[in-house]
Length: 189
Image (tube, rainbow, N blue to C red; front, side, top):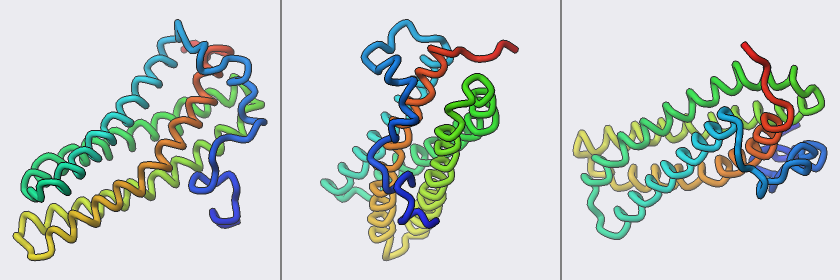
């Protein structure tokens, strides 16, 4: 089934289906206090991704307002590189370590974890597009190419396109993972 035909595809969904939310229904967001250290760290990581994305969006907005291409390059290039590395590493740890562990702790949520793994693939496609667009922008500015502003605009558009699916994924992942950790725990060792 193509992503366009899959109502659970990251680009298509507006939230998780009810069958994946039974743990969150038991522990709604407004009761996420006194969290297990792993759950608290998870939320901190997600907050850092949201803040990093907001920072990059602010840099783009500033560039659109003042047209200072060199300032955009100087500030956005390292910010983008750090964001891409941080998010890719985070997803690798989730998919390679935490999700398999969580499947054992709460087998009923395996389909939800599978969906989050598929989300990682969709998000990775956006990360790849951001990397390619960021590299093209860097090369254009470094080489004083006459179309450097066009590359900046394409990077800005690619960044804007990545925002909504990443936000959807972060919210949905929290709705599965945080209650799971709080209510079922994680294996020791």
